[in-house]
Length: 203
Image (cartoon, one colour):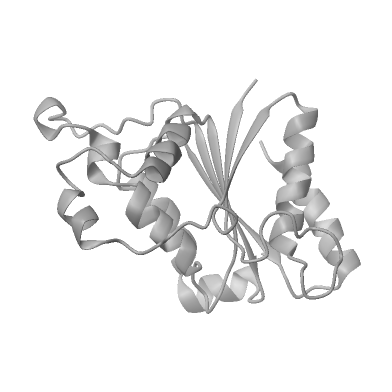
């Protein structure tokens, strides 16, 4: 059994997968299909729903001062960090807004993935090896209006480069990094077919 951690970012929360006008999210539909798949495989799915958790994405002055040297004292951040260390795979699911990640996800990265959390006590970790030893794969699933090929040509994969390379590769992660783009503007039937194919090919 694998421990699958999903970090979900949408104002309507992960419960908005039903077709209810003004309270429906294709990001939530992606999460729901992923949850059903992983559950059918006997895996455990742990959801961090940032909006449902009322997560504050703003880094405070005190947090910035403690970023390198002190252990985390905020109970919510401590909980998130503990769940990350237990994950075999992490899925980030979010809409793409103005070709970038939403502010909530960026704040989650800034507040949770601190240097102290990733590397521990620098005096005891001279090789700068990261502490996420259970983690085997990280997936980014973005729901976006810009076709993936156009996004690659015009914006040089800014979202995946920032999240997958700028965070995980930079901290020394050696496992699999995958970006999956979902067309958020396609008709519902076409979108569902594409989602079914995506879920089926996830490994």
